[in-house]
Image (cartoon, rainbow, N blue to C red; front, side, top):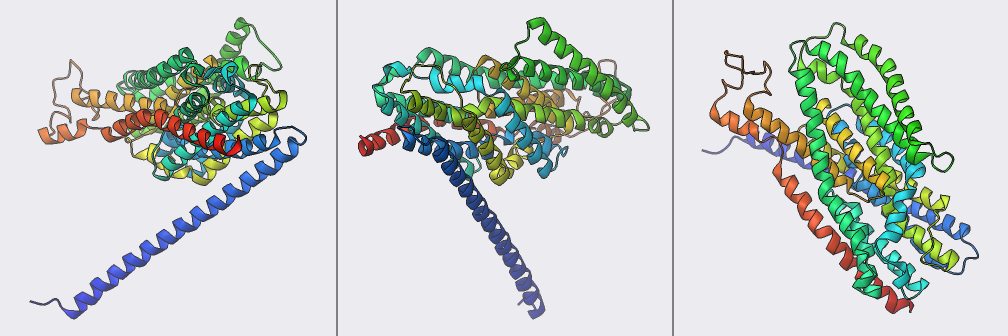
Length: 500
């Protein structure tokens, strides 16, 4: 039996409509990509012009100008790839729109890079290899430039395919690979590399543990209470105030050292003061918001929007302080070597070098960041404000500690570790029947909603985190360092043949 003519026409019309819709989507995406690339090219042109002007008269100006452009390119890739880990959870929990996430990340990434980024820059530029073993200044500048370019190319490739890779791994591998190509394996400071490698293992585990502990605390002290509104009124202001105190203490230790170096008791007093002030402000706001609210999980989640936004800002600040080193560390080393002719002296960070890193991260975030923000915010695991708050605050604390110690850790792995820590805790509670509402306790004798579910549904609900993202991150971790090292070694060999 043949299909009626009218039916065939209707089917054809629907197919054409879908085709035209797909064509428009592809056209819009292509236009956005072209515009983004054009704006990125304009930024790099400005960097080239500014670097050329600011370094006029320096003997090795060509090296500095080229390194400045590559450093700006690297910074944009960091903004496009790594920053998603900071604001992605808040976006996934619907506490921030995409525009709001981009604005907050831009402001606090730039602030962190300019205010507190100096200490980690010194580790990247001087701690990984021993400059005294490099034959001469020209070789040193070439190997640093090779490291920058190799790392930037790898991150750009990964970003194109939507893979959240570690920019820290990329630049560390690049410096190591080009250093070995220039002067052999003895040039690498293996004790520093072992500490950095240990931090790569410890930081995601620590991030996951801290995030899980925060979520367990929220569940036990708020969600599992009979009067959840009263519990939230008590604990949410304390958590926000604690975050503010930690942030203020960090700023006083690392952000203002150029103009003021407080004693330890002053740092503690500053943290306590901001804790008390924030609590005094937030407590009545939460109390006002809770009036008339229903005693449900949805109502409680609404109270976490404010602390989630604050913790996302804190994480962005910490990320800017830590990861600006990946873009401008080798650049600072090149500028220092070209200006002084010395490779072992302490590296002074010119203001324009820090600005290149901060501006590049912001521009890369604005132009190319939304793609990975959506991935991190919604595809790894389901987020709500409470879970996203735990992820963001855990990652912020871990990154801040690493930045204070001068260790270049991977914020990607910290954030993913925190996400998986939250997810695995949820799966644990799921297996115990404490995630469905009407939470079961030892004294409960009535069946909970979980008890009434069929076996198939229980099994399905236990898998709350997509495991393939865990394996993809591990794969990226294993590949990035050696691949960046090989890229950098190859680029250095090519530059050596061309320039020497």
